[in-house]
Each structure stands twice: as structure tokens, then as C-alpha cells.
Amino acid sequence: MKPLLALLLALAALVLARAAETPRVFLAGDSTMADKPLDLPERGWGMALGPLLREGVAVRNHAMNGRSTKSFLDEGRWAKLAAELRPGDFVLIQFAHNDEKREDPKRFTDPATTFRENLRRFVREARARGAVPLLATPVCRRKFDAAGKLRDTHGDYPAAVRAVAQEEQVPLLDLQRATAAWLQREGDIPSRRFFMWLAPGAHPRIPEGRQDDTHFVAAGAEAVAALAVAAIREQNLPLAPWLRP
Image (cartoon, rainbow, N blue to C red; front, side):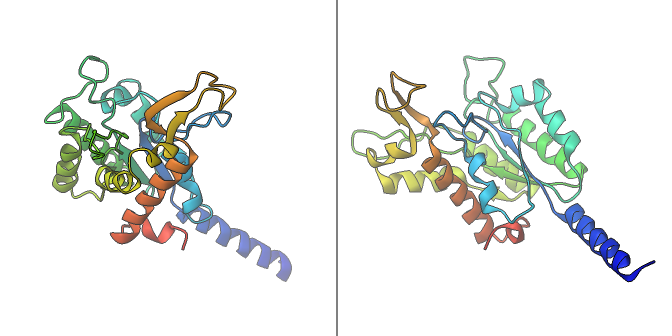
């Protein structure tokens, strides 16, 4: 074999080996994390995660608007995600916004029972495929009282996520606490710039404007992704070496 050909084959083998070792980051969650159409201003924070990871680390965003742990399972979305996993991948799981909807039996889960059971299932099935699960508490809604204090809207769900993380020994990104501190620092009126607060006529696809305290624009999505990455780095989690410096 010619030396140049041997060198090229060796380099190709090295590249393939490194590619096989590079993990992927799978996201399971709701609209606050999901991919959104680029011709609209709304952004899920999962869309802002990729640029914060090292080159070659792909983000597979399976998060979807309106989904709870129950509907994510019932619609086969979790099964599809799990089927794609390979050893060394990461699975970041963030639910609660739609699990809270007691009036909707297709989505509601009880934070003391079914919500926890579904989270445990996600964790155990990810591990069974050799992937590394990470749990995240839900991001806060932008709800302030008359005194300018951020109001909690998630009830017992963040505590349920923390409990499952402890029971299953799963890394926890406490985005509920992190986003609460962030929004409180920003304050009521200034924090609107991170959310889908649009004046009438500000966007051609939303001519009537919008006042949405749940969903982010790009600045909000980027801020939340940065908080998630900061938590990964601070805890020196297994995903930390795959973050950009």
C-alpha cells in the first residue's frame, strides 16, 4: 500500500472513531424547549443550546408544543426518541407546564404519582440504552404580583422533579430556581423583552401583537440556555467536557 494512501486511511479511521465517540444531546420537553418556525419570533431554549456545545455535538430536539409527560408517552414521542439513543448520548428532560393542566385528561399528571412515574420511566429507559439522563425543573412563567415579586405558578411539580432526581441519582438542572432568580433580578417590566410581548404591528405574522408570559423570544431562549449550561458546568456533570470553553 502506498504511504499516502495508508496515511489517508488512517486519518479517515481516526475521524470515524472520534465521530462515533461524540455524544448527541436529546431533548424531551414542551414548548418552552421546542424548535419553532424561524419566520416567527418565538424560540424554545433548546434552539439556543447547540451553539454552546462543542463542534460536532448534535442536538436532537424532540420537545414539542403542548406536551406533558403523559402525552409525550401516549403519542409515541418518547419511544421514537429512545429508539435513536446509543451509549454515551445525553437526554435532557424538562416537563411540567402541561402536566399541570388538570382540566385536560390527555395531559394532566399528578405531581405525587403519575408525573413522578413518567419521569422515572424516562430515566430508566434512557439508562437501559446506555444514555445519560438529566432532569430539569420547569422554567418559570413571567408572573409578577403588584409588589413586583415573581409568583410561583408550578406548584408541586418542581419539587417532584427534584425528588425523582434524588431517588434515581440523576443530575438535576434546577431551571425553576435559576429562572426565578434571573427574572426577579430583571424585574417585571424589563423582563418582558425576553418573552413574546409584541406590540401590535411589530411583526407581520402577528399583526395584532401578543402578551405571552410563557414563551421566549431569542434573547430569552439564549438566556435560559446559558443558565442550563452554567448549571452543567458548576456541577461538573458528564456533559461539561462537551461545552464550549
